Image (tube, rainbow, N blue to C red; front, side):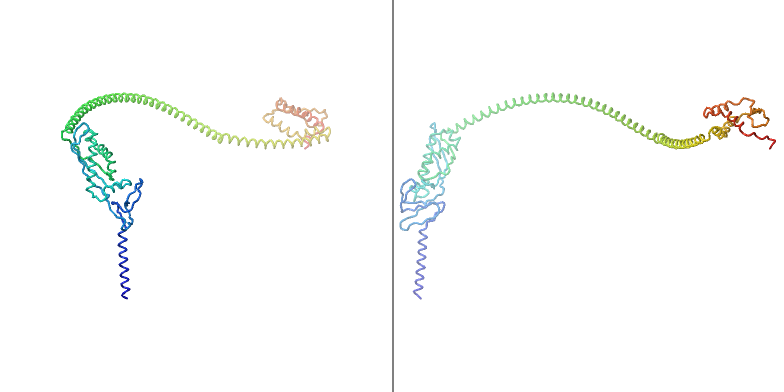
Length: 432
């Protein structure tokens, strides 16, 4: 059992040793550092062969006993850049102070320059090399610019310096992040004189500008007054024109109103006349209806009644006439059958009515004396006698007998005379 424990312990030790060995062989690179693994040769992108490889962030495994690992920081290194008595364009010595931030470049092709120059050196060495190069570039840039350009446009000056130093910095394997010019002075008072001159020019320009602005303001004020006065005059003119137009419009409106009023009055009169005409028409229609109801309708009714009555009377007359015609026809037939004495018989039948009419005609005549004359042959037998009225008979009796004779062709007096001769003699009153 003891040997098993020994074997287990031995295995554990081996595992631990292997783990520590493997851990020591694994290279883990943070993002702000660069690992340089030396020991084996490799070809670069430009065709050169070098004895190292560079790892930027991430991890890798090194070969023990063959490769060695070194690190370079990619952190920013601040540098104070200053030059004194650096001659600018025009032989004016200037003192310039600035600040720059540099770092080891991580760009391919530039990082290799930094590895070959600064691997194993600390940040102070890198700072010193970069500062000397930047100050040399600063003096070279100052010689191409006037003090005014350097002092007035520092951004342009800094950009020119960056462009000038960029190639040199990249050749060293570094990268210039920021470059700012803080102060520009001179020891001969040139910039101060320039400042005073500039101040004087500025003051002069300010006074001239102020005077110009004052003149322009006065001119503008005068122009504004002129424009204002012109605008006021134009406004008054426009107001007057508008007032004239308003008066004309008011006159037109009044005329139109009067015309409209007259038209409305005429229309009212016309409407009133139409209304009265309609009312009169209604009155006429009412009178027609009243006349129709009071006169025409009763007259029409009366007319119809009279027509109906006349028709009734005519029908009665027609029937009576038809009856009399029928009677006359029968009498004519009887007359034809009776022979020669038919006329006398008819006269005798009509005699009562004739006598009644004759009597009616002489109803109002007073007879004072009547004489009876015998005309019958003197036989002394006596008989009916036709009285001979002593006074003249009325013309009405004669007229009636003539009319009867004209109508019937019978002379009543002759008929009566014949009848007397034919009738038996009348008995005397004494005979009872």
